[in-house]
Image (cartoon, rainbow, N blue to C red):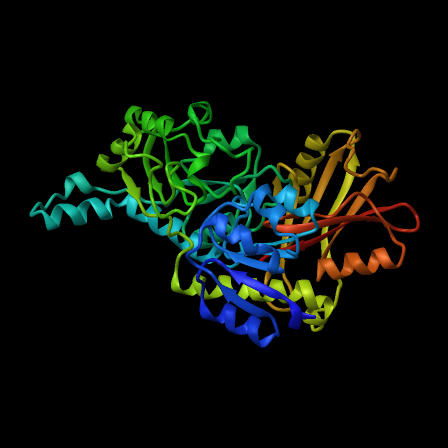
Length: 447
């Protein structure tokens, strides 16, 4: 099938991407310079497109792409694509959040340590002939509470990097049960009460747009340090600078800015420099980098490999994953109804010594390959709708491998599926009913 698949590359990437697609029988063509309108005029001649962030894939573009079967973005997010419209046309959307997560985790840690110890400020002063020790006295991470907003690939990577430090790590995410051995998931109230450091790791969505604003910042109980390696549009820069001036935010490390153009190659959409950005440029307690958190030599190659593998999986399906059997690999969680979940959790903590969190207890273990894994034990309220349409008092969650192939096989076998499978940057979820009406949640972790 791949012999007839034409792919247009509109951004340059690691050469292995081109080479491996060619070896698999795909026909590659490149156009790194034409305008969006010029690409639109010829996109009907292609079945796939590989992009980074050169321009937005909108409805106009998608209407012109009458033979498009997939869009592959060599990066973590799909915010430059009208995803709903593309999916309505049956176009497969491919991204690679797992490709640069390690790079982002390391960058976030590096920026935090530099900020805490005034490394960049001290370096500049020495180069200017100033030897100032007291003015560069630093802070230690030891004993601090680090809060991560958005616990997907990037947030999990940052938490893993923090394991060597004596810190408490909390995470806040709209999806339940994403906490693991490296971070305890909490509700927003507890998060805002306890954290000393906030690191943002959310994708850009309408829900996360401008989410870090004066209202959110004012809700934190303590002055805090802020890191953003996610998306600039998620932060209201003026509110951030106001908090820096007041001391509510002690320092900020920003790899992304709301002023970036979509291509990330130019800062501003006009000639005027925003006052808030001018403040950041002159603040000693602010560290700025040009959207490079996932931009390493290693991630450049890893991103390309992930994209190649996913494109091949679209066309070769199970044949491309023949060595990975579609099956259950472990118990991901046991969920049950309770009259008073909070009181019950406390009972288990007091009498059985279980390490209870807001959702129950997370048991960590290693799989056969030595990878970190976890099983969640959670009591739900009696009025929960999460177990529906099952009328049972419990629901099981199973960890699976080769999720897509398993769902396809279950459909073909006539197994009852509940709703549609859902995919997030931290995992894929699907729900089925067994012959006795028990609801089963199937979960494939990413990473």
